[in-house]
Amino acid sequence: MENTYGDPNLKPEKGYVWTFGGNTKLNDKTDISASVFYSDIKDAIDWVWDGGTTTQAININKEKRRGLELSLNHDFDDNLSAYASYTYVQVKQDKGYVFAKDLTTKPNIYRAGLKYKNADWLFTLNANAVTGQSEKQFVDSSYFTLDLGAQYKINDNAKLFINGYNLTNARYAEFGGLYKNGEAKYPMAGRSFIIGAEYTF
Image 1 (cartoon, helix red, strand yellow):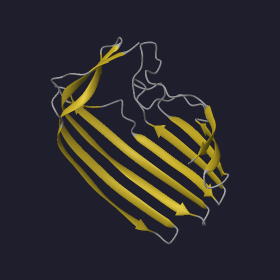
Image 2 (image 1 turned 135 degrees about the vertical axis):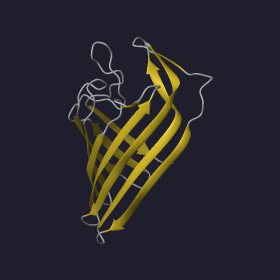
Image 3 (image 1 turned 45 degrees about the vertical axis):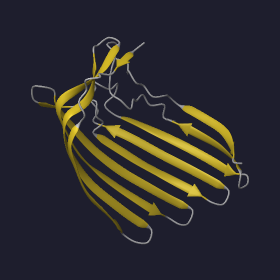
Image 4 (image 1 turned 90 degrees about the vertical axis):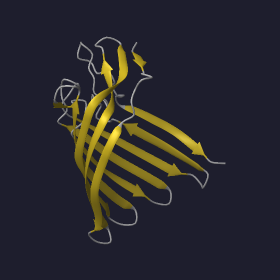
């Protein structure tokens, strides 16, 4: 069991964030957007792990974060639409010596999906991929997941749904961290399904 501790003497983070971006419509059915960001934070809050079962919040001298985001949305018709995006992030931290990369950061994130909707049905397909992860902090350097959902509208108040998550049964974690035996500290669930119904009063 892991224990997590705060610190009543933590200092608040101070710094600035710059974001520049824009979006435009290529035509009536397609729009794109792009942005770049940069931050410089003093007394950034981080978590330190003692290698056993304890993590604690600490202040580090400085943290610099930079990256970019690109996205595209397209409507094929009134029912079918798609999206795709790419995010790049690099984080460097100064913990008292020199700036070094934060290896718990996911550097390259890719997302894409399809959605079909009519009066009664809603179908969604979402793909997510990550590359460039540090194998010192993650089990694998990359992974790919696929989620699928279907929803049927019975009437204005009731609907049935089934969702499948991580259909590729990928080994992945949203947060970096490995135990001494190489297992992920924060593993996400494998392939799973949820079947249900919703009724609104």
